[in-house]
Length: 218
Image (tube, rainbow, N blue to C red; front, side):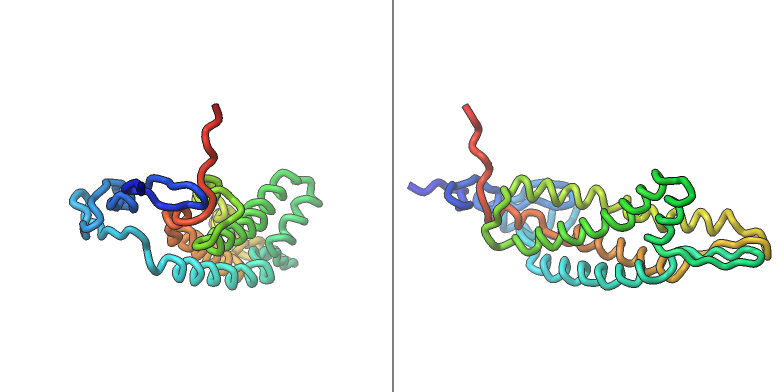
């Protein structure tokens, strides 16, 4: 006997809103019958799944990866003193901070500008690749990974904020000036594109396939 509203996920049947003929508004979270086209609460167009989700994810992901390359090759900060000019890349600036006795600041820069962006690229790619196939990770764990990627994304802009603050504060005419390098724009584009890529991912697709949640222990 087949239960109404049950979908196959791995080897067990799991009750889902989609299998029960319901659709959830992604804006206000109100649940409506599947045939409803517009949310009666907030006016958002209702879709059980975003058919173009994966195309959007990969397009913005690729944009972020491409922009991240010049963000690391070109100077992030251009410092001009009276008789000296110094250009610093992301990694080069972190190394300079470390050599000048600021290891904590250097570590923060490396985490926010290297570890987090690269980790986000890998996480988004993993989530996108595992959609539509039986992954080795439970659906709940993949959903937690998606939520973590969305949460941590905003902290990737710390380098851009530091450059903007320094550029506005250190302006001593011909004595010393600091201005953003070409890498700052590329880095900002990379971060924004990666954030949009994560937001374009329809997390509901995680629950369409894969291993079922663990059974509660007695």
